[in-house]
Amino acid sequence: MNKEEWKNYKRYGIEHLWECDNNGWISALYDAKMFKIKNFIEKQIKKQYLKYFKFRYRLVKKPVIPVLEYVVTTKCTMNCKNCNTLVPYFTKDNHIKMINFEQFKQDLDKLLKSVDYINLFGFVGGEPLLNNDLNKMVSYACKQRKIKHVFIATNCTIIPNEKLLKALINKKVGVQISNYSHVENLPDGISVKHQEVKELLQKSGVKISNPHEPSGSKNWQTMPKIYADTQEEKEVVKNYNCCYGRFCYMLADGLILQCTACIYMTRSLELSDNIKKELINVRASQSPKELTGQLIKFLSKPYSQFCHYCHFVDMQYGLPCGEQLVMEDK
Image (cartoon, rainbow, N blue to C red; front, side, top):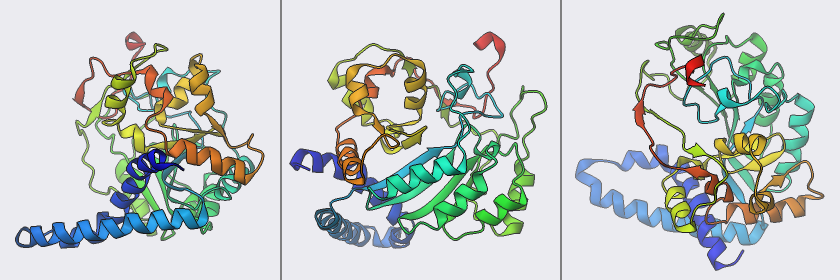
C-alpha cells in the first residue's frame, strides 16, 4: 500500500473503525465542564490508535474491514418506495437466490482467511428473517475469532423462531428493529409486529441496538437516480465524501461491493469496464493471498467506480420511513 492508498484506507477505513470503537467509552469523557480536556485526550488517544493500526497492518499485511453486510436474500416482505437497496425495483430474475448455510460458510471462511478481522458483520436483505438458515449463519459467525460484533436488521414483519432466538442470545449480537407500525398499504397478508418482536427479544435476553425507535420517523431520503452515464471525477468525489455508502461495504452473491445501491446496479445495468475491474468475486479468488491483495486495493481507493452511476439530483430529505410503493409509482 503506497502513501496515497494508506491515506484513503485510513480515512475511509481506520477512522471509521475509530468512530465505531470510541462511540461508547469515549463518550464518558463528554462533560460541558471538561470539554477542552476531553477534546485533548480524545485527540491524543486517536493519534495513538491510528499509529497502532498502521503498525498492525505492516505486521500482518492484511486489512481490517470496519463494517461488512452479508446479503442473505434480496426478497422482502415490504415494498418500501425509498428502500436503500432498491428492492422493489428488482425484477423477478434479478433477485439474489436465497443463500443457504453451506454457501454462506464457504464465502465467510474464504474471506476471513484474507483479512485481519471484521469489526461489525451484518446479516441483511431484503428481509433476512425470510432465510430459514439464518440461525445457523448467526451461530457460525459468532464463533469466528475474526468477527468482533454481529448484527441483524429486520422490519419486524416476521416473528423470530426458537432456533433463531437461541442463536441471537450471544454477547456479540445486536438486533436492529425498524419501527414501521405507522405504515399503510402493506402487501396482502403482511403486518408489522414491532412491539411483539421487541418484547420477545427483550424477554429472551437478546440485545436490541435501537429499542426506543419511534414510529413515523421522518428520517429517510430518496435514493440517487441510477443510470449508466459517467460523471466528472470532481463531482463523483464530492458526492462520495458526503454519502453514507462510503462506509457500507456489502457481500452480495459472492461479490464485495461498495454499498447497497451497487447490488441493484450489478444485477440490473450493463457495467463499464472500470466497474468490472473493481468487482471482487470472493468465490472466484484463487487464494487467500490473492483475495487479500484485491481487498487492500478495494479498501484504499478514493471512491468507487459505481459512484459514476449515482446522480445526486433532486434529492428529497426528511421523508417518512417505510412509505410503500403503490402501482402508480412504478
